[in-house]
Amino acid sequence: YHAKKKGNSYLFFNDTMNRQAVKRLQIENLMRFGLKEDHFEVYYQPKMNIRTGKFTGMEALVRFITPKKGIISPGVFIPIAEETGQIIEIGEVVLNKSCRDVKEWLDAGLFNGRVAVNLSAKQFSLPDLTTRIDVILQKNELPSYFLELEITEGTVMDDPQDAISIMRSLSARGIHLAMDDFGTGYSSLAYLKQFPLNTLKVDKAFIDDMKTERGRNMVDSIVTIAHNLDLHVVAEGVEQADQITILKELNCETMQGYYYSKPLSKAEFTVFLEKQQSESALSLVHQA
Ligand code: C2E
Ligand code: MG
Ligand code: MG
Ligand code: MG
Image 1 (cartoon, rainbow, N blue to C red):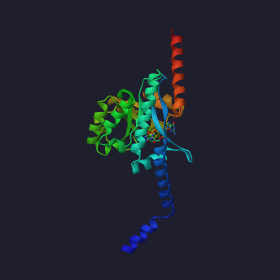
Image 2: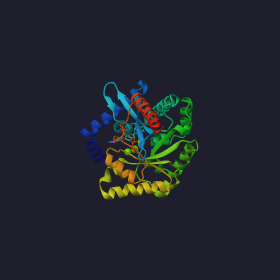
Image 3: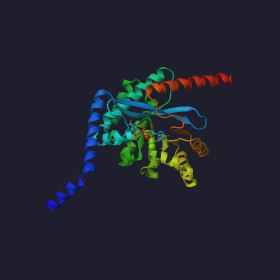
Image 4: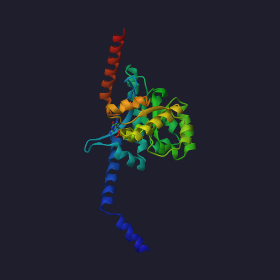
């Protein structure tokens, strides 16, 4: 038995797995170094009101910019950071920089909406989560009104009752809560009703699927359920004009995607905000 088990585990640890383990370790080390050297930056992707075509807010998305390996995608490093626990420190950097940037734009009179920051499951279940968030908001002199947190179904369905009380304490501070990637995880409608959410973000997979009638019906149903629960709907990953036409018909109010803008660096986003401001000033002149 012993020999067989030993033999199996040896067979299991083949070359591919070995290479994967090495790569993971490399990324873990890069992240440790990156945290020390400030290699994590925040990009911002604007969201647009579908009815008016106007800019309404943005999502903060982390970028790991390494001097040697270039930009490493969140899809690659976030799952590893989740496992090693480094996501807690990375998440804190993102939250801090997002609040700092929004405060700057607010003071410059360029923005007065919310920034949506992704919160990982590990962060969400920290016993002192609300204190940590309060500290970051205070440090940056940013009222909680300007913050929205995006969480996924997996994060809240692990222990729904506990999640409800955490969400309530965030919500009581005026922080908005969004359910991210809705439809890709598992969550029950019974809980969806109980969670103190403000926004439901329909995953890109459903938006892509609107090419078919069944796919459109699906998004139609999701939007209807969301509206019945008084939730605001954001369509994720909108890339084409005809998707916007359909979303408008389905009464989805907000969109985010490459069609409107890709995620922008802080400098690029500042230029974007300045352009927004001059455009709205121009439209006021035309109205007068
Ligand atoms: P997400 O929160 O669902 O973010 C949306 C992702 O879709 C972003 O990928 C964004 O760049 C991408 N996207 C937006 N519009 C389009 C489009 O029209 N087409 C396509 N193909 N993609 C689009 P990104 O920045 O690579 O982030 C991937 C995921 O990594 C995020 O998905 C989120 O789950 C996670 N993530 C990103 N930043 C953070 C963070 O600061 N903390 C945590 N915990 N997770 C983060
Ligand atoms: Mg998100
Ligand atoms: Mg999402
Ligand atoms: Mg998504």
